[in-house]
Length: 338
Ligand code: KG4
Ligand code: ZN
Image (cartoon, rainbow, N blue to C red; front, side, top):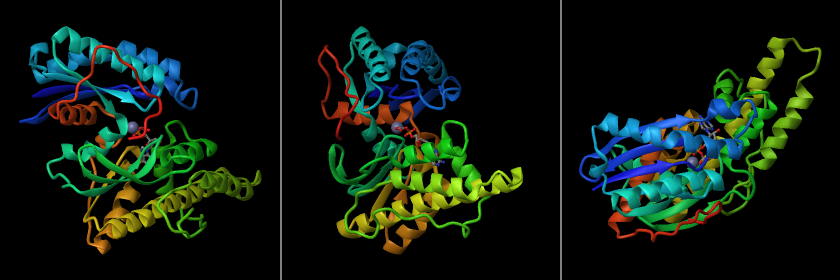
C-alpha cells in the first residue's frame, strides 16, 4: 500500500509517499520561514495562503521525483489537527479532494501522532512499549506508548511548550525567527558556568513541565547583565552565556523528567520527537542519562524532527491499514487531545 501524506498544520508544506513494503519513497518540503521572518513569527493567514500556492506544485514534484503516477497511490493522509485552523483546512481540503478524485480512502492524522511515530521511518526502529517525549513548538508531552493508537499522557507543560520558550527567549535576545535553532547555535559559544537557571518543577513529584518562568528568568538576567557601557563584543558574549544557561536548564529539566518517567514505567526505550528533538545538547544528554537507566534512545533524523510530510504518510498508513477512513464531510481541530 502506498500512502500520500500531506502536512500543512503550521509553517511548512510537506508531502511524502510511504510504501508499506519499501518504506519512504520520497518527500518534499517547502518552509515558509522567509515569508514570516519579517513579522518575527507565523502569520496564520499568510501561512494558509502559501499552503494553497505550494501544495499541488509540491505534489507534482514528488510524483516526478519518485517516478510514480496518481494511480499508484492507494490512500491519502493529511494532518487534521492540532494546528492553525486555516492552514489545516488547506491540507484537509486538498487531501480529501485528491482521495475522492482518485477513488482511494483518506484519513485525517493527529499531528503529534505523526511526530511520535517519526522514528519508525529510520532503519533501526523502537519497539513497543516505550515512553515518548514530544517536544515541539506547540507541545511538551510525556506519553506512554503501548502500540499504535494506545497512548497515555503521563505529563505535559502547564504553560509554554519547550519550543515556544526557546522561540520567545530567542526573540527577546534579538535573534531571528524561528529562534530555537538560532538560540542553540548562539549557546555553543556561551560559558556554561557564568549563569545557572532554575530547573522548573523538578523538585516536586510528577511529570508535568512549566517553561514560561525560564523565559522571564532569561529576560531579567538580560536586563541586569547587559549595560549600555558594555562593548558590542561583551554584550554578545553575555547573550551567548544566557543562551547557554537557558538551553542547559531546558535540556536538564527534560532529561530529569524522562529519567523519572522511564523509572516509573519500567520502560526500556525512550523516543524523542518533535522540533526540539533536533537539539544536539538534548540528544547527547538524553543518550547519557538513558544509558544510566539501562534504556535506549530513538529519535528521527534531524529533518524529520521538525514538521514534514513523511511522518504524516507513515502515521496515515498505520491508521488506514487498521481500517480507519473518513466519510465525505470533513472538519479540522485546532486543539485535539491525542
Ligand atoms: O515540530 P515542529 O517543527 O513544529 C511544531 O509542531 O510546533 O517544532 C518547531 C519547534 C520550534 O519551536 C523550533 O524553535 C524548535 O522546534 N526547534 C529547536 C531546534 N530546532 C527546532 N529548538 C531548540 N533547538 C533546536 N535545534
Ligand atoms: Zn510539529
